[in-house]
Image 1 (tube, rainbow, N blue to C red):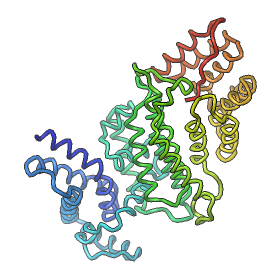
Image 2: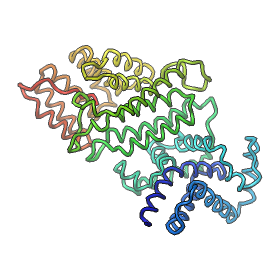
Image 3: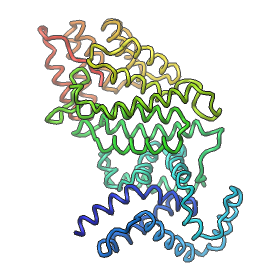
Image 4: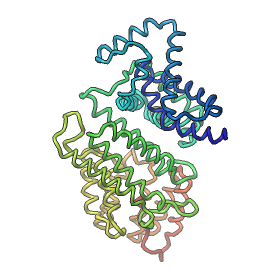
Length: 440
């Protein structure tokens, strides 16, 4: 029975902890202290709920417990009076003064605003990318340090240090717990979207380890993206990112074979694609496109399609094709061309080369890929030789193709992908048939 209760507590914590930490951070103005207070409330729940049962409103119970601990915290703190004055001044400036901590912590009205503030704080550019990812999963994903470490194949002490340093940096830099002003909203929102998509991508195509995918990370990123879309409904790029993740996640079951081996796009059974996720993704894409076409506030990302909206449109081209042969590769080339224009990157150029090879033939694609071989950023990027190997094989340059696949295998840190690339190298024989596409 206790085990069932603990599982229920764990589920409640995943749902309620972001709101709890966000509400506390609004009052104490310190994310680290807010998380400590929330953890104290969790400990109290673990002590009491197995005997008393999970309360009817567990979120309210946790907030009440955290409220009492917040009051105790400030009573123990020698700077209690100064803290009261500081918080009073800050809240007065925002025309949201509260008479005491009880009132502040009992105020449920601004919970959406609190969560949005927490999102922007956890993803603040003052932190390193790795720290932003870890802190976001910790504060907003409700993951433990051990869970984050296992998800990214990093030692637990390393993740713990990242989180501690991140919270210390936010405190030392006096990062305000607020939604950024209009002048910096675009850049700050881009940082948030980057973190969420990094989490998703690590789940979708694991960088290292023995698994081709880590679905739990995809689910965490999708949940964060959906929350952000509710909190910032007028931002087209937010809906663009959600659309991109929904559509990509729809292929998850088809991307992995019975033994966990990777299944590439052209070999996937499209009847296994999740049609519900595709419909949700296309609906989010439609919202993003409509928002992007309107004259919105100047601080939004509207005015031209953003990078996530364009990538979502590329994903939609695949989702709408009932068979691989029906894919609108000419349209995908156009979309990658526009993406490269607004966000220049050799990785985008490489993906465009794949699309060109599909739309206009392998020779045209190889010409673009060869032009990228001197790019320093792609020097150890395994996808470059794997794409080149695919195009060379299509052109019947078999020995060269084998060498490229072998080089790609030596560069990847994912064992499943290495096995796939070595298998493709072994298939490079003079009598080999038309190869598979490398497009994921």
